[in-house]
Length: 311
Image (cartoon, rainbow, N blue to C red; front, side, top):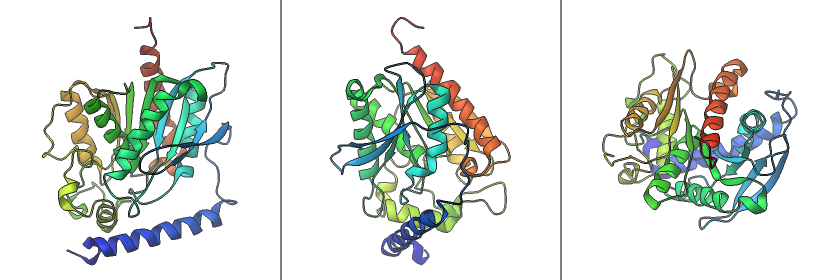
């Protein structure tokens, strides 16, 4: 085991990464090109109360006259340690405009300040709050969908699992976009079809040990639903759109979880993004548009089908 496999060292590195990311974000604000500049954003900030800590969120309202559109709760990526709600701005604007959903982009608690299981618990409480408070905020909490990229996709999967276990709220669709779903298997044992994928094994050591330093907790079903150790029946879990980039180090676990969902009758679609790596949609506008359009199609189908009186 390397030094990065030591929880204290991993936590220190994670904190340093958080600091560097904050500095880099401030330096790049003015010169970074905005993806999909033709799509404006109508946003406001809210605070969602949870037992872990208040969660700030950015609400994106779709254009049009619908006074109570369906709602999509989004969780950003960042290895469970990076705050990055602004990274999903392009995605949130796109989904609001094209799918006609209110997007609630949640800035959830991160490690090592808040280790597992705090983030998935907070994420579930946030989604439950969104489902219950649509009337006063202008969205339809009964037409509820969730999703996320990378670590956010793992949190969305954990939210859907908790909703299954606790009898609600009812989720019409979960969108799992290149999620890490097996924290038991070390990063050094995961394989990509290319020599140097975007995610490197050392990153996995930092993220996993900062987020879940106890190896036993990494096997928990809210952390590793794609590991063979989780054999629970998933019948009744929210339908899922699973998106896995071809070159991603996490591709195999995303594919395994898609197969598991298929067996439970809960796989809406599994889409492999060709010639793409982890976080491809942050850099490649064409590939991002392709995947985002697929998400839009599934969101429209899911939220239309749960309207009373519609099949």
